[in-house]
Length: 289
Image (cartoon, rainbow, N blue to C red):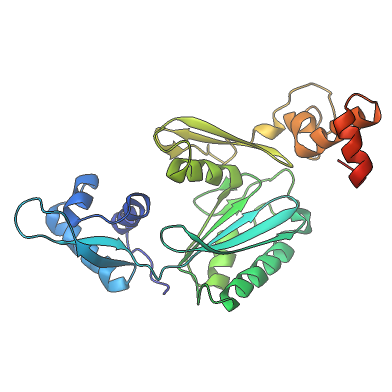
């Protein structure tokens, strides 16, 4: 199944069904600014594509009962989380239940061609396992700023060779389905908004500390990306003028003090200097922190 929503109204209906589960036509009408006749046309068109199905009778609101509308159970979605040193690929159904998952070490500095060869091989392995014959949509998270409308990384500090690479276009052609590309922490924020601690919150920050440091900014229920997609790229804000060298080439970045490599370096120093018996024991056991 490779059907796509034909317009913004259909895309909105699909999001409502994704976030709210099965709904009657009347309930959907309460949540979208469309006339009853226009709503009926768009729902019928979605039914024809197979993206949604009519399933079970809705609760009566007076008059003839209608069927609930829900996302088709056969839908298969691909999620790809590209980190600095590893990549995760998962397949879900329309309710975002994970049906298959793979994780592998990877170096994002190898560039987009090498990384996506690995991603496509992992996706093929998941297809071969029987969890999906193909994909109806894919979401890709990358550890750097993204110009969201085009799905293109913009001067990502720790991703040499990725600037301007057409991620969305290239993967859409390879996978044969719509592809969304965004900064990984923006996607984390959306996940918390959809099914985590931020479900009832309209304005919040989601901060990730890993190899790098990033922030997903949600204002009024929508992700705020800024003009070039760099609004949440807080890891490279200068915290100390002429400070520690950072992997991005600058000095004094927040990431140079509190990113994963910096924390590991400071922990190892504490272990070797005798400031932490626990860290010293771990260093002796595994040889590094």
